[in-house]
Amino acid sequence: MGEIISGKLLAKKIKEEMKLDIEKYNKLYGRAPHLVVILVGDDEASKSYVKGKEKASLEIGVTNTTIIMDSNTTEEELLKLIDELNDDDLVDGILVQLPLPKHIDQTKVITRISYEKDVDGFHPLNVSALYERRFGVIPCTPRGIMEILESKKIEISGKRVCVVGRSSIVGMPVAKLLLDANATVTICHSKTKNLGEITKEADILVVAIGKPKYIKADMVKAGAVVIDVGVNKDPLTGKLCGDVDFENVEPKASFITKVPGGVGPMTICCLLENTLNLYLKHMERKD
Ligand code: NDP
Image (cartoon, rainbow, N blue to C red; front, side, top):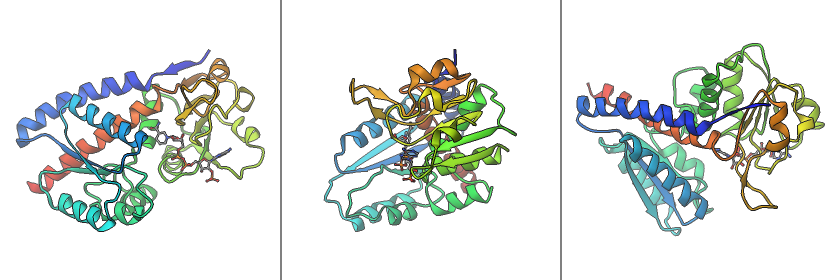
């Protein structure tokens, strides 16, 4: 039987610690960290993600301003708002909820956010920092995955790791972090042949593909650590499920995360950690 790693409980513990830190820094610097979240349009999933970020911020004493813009907002209007927030000394972190409406160039928008306020870690300077092993902002989901592994003291060095999915927000950065932790990493994607043969070799299997219950028990090594990033709707039940066939994989795994309650809560927790770090750096720059 695999031990289920609760990202929810881990996030709760980290957030309680952060709350105390924020109380202390609030007294020291005269204000709390301030995160601004921008949502363009009325995509239901995005609205609920933004709400979750707002709730978590308020729980630990981070000031959260959520700006909701009409779906007809022009690229110029959005860039102008970002410029204003970049210049606003009372703002520490800026997050533009993705995806943006098609008429807005996502790369242009991400690049416009000051890398010093880029809580998502998507700015090219933060991306290059990750690949050059310099200090930057680590994207929230990959950071959360590393914290999940760390929380259970799971040995990474020398282990065979398979990351399924190569997106720039999850698969690639988490593969880099695992490589930096001295794992031997294989990255798989939609064109990978004999996927199950490769995943079965992995001591640690990270799956981020967005395909409900795609990873079956026969694709997993006995005793593997399985981290399920996927967030999908089960076509049969309509309930949330991951990319891993949890019921059948769990008995084979040594550790496993569940959806919901696994990686998701740690993604939000790491967003707050990134916000707190950027606030502290902001305050240091002012000294
Ligand atoms: P993307 O769609 O950007 O990337 C999906 C990746 O999976 C691609 O690299 C794709 O390959 C690969 N892939 C797709 N199908 C297969 C397949 N059959 N076999 C092997 N590889 C495949 O998704 P994201 O990385 O943004 O997200 C992945 C999942 O994680 C989604 O369910 C998303 O909702 C969830 N997610 C969850 C978060 C959380 O906090 N819990 C945060 C972010 C995402 P190719 O490159 O060849 O197209």
